[in-house]
Image (cartoon, rainbow, N blue to C red):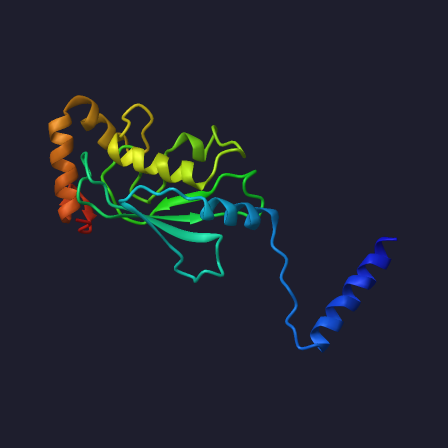
Length: 183
């Protein structure tokens, strides 16, 4: 019975090709869900969405956040999203492409956000992830750090932390680490 369906499907594809139509690429469940999530996005006014590979590649996109308050005021931070075909059953892979002095983002761009790890649930969506990233830039969390040094400074001396963030954002070296300008 299964082979019969495959034969009929193949015959339909050949007939479509003979009529001059291109075969229709079927979308995965993850692509369909992502399309829905993107169409329902409710971005903060300081966030933008871009598709560097074109609109045909929905599974890879970038979100730019420009905080309008907090430690990172005036900065421009770009996050890349990679979505698997089994989304939403697997969390998006998110990296910060902008090198930033932040307790929850390490120098390689890995992001420590609970909903990208153990607290991910299929009912969550891209909007929730973007909101989480926005919140991390508004209120860094020293209790669950990826960058231990930045977390210790934030916890022990918030004024020095603010100064370090500003120095990193205007570009230059902080210790042995170079931060490109992002302001």
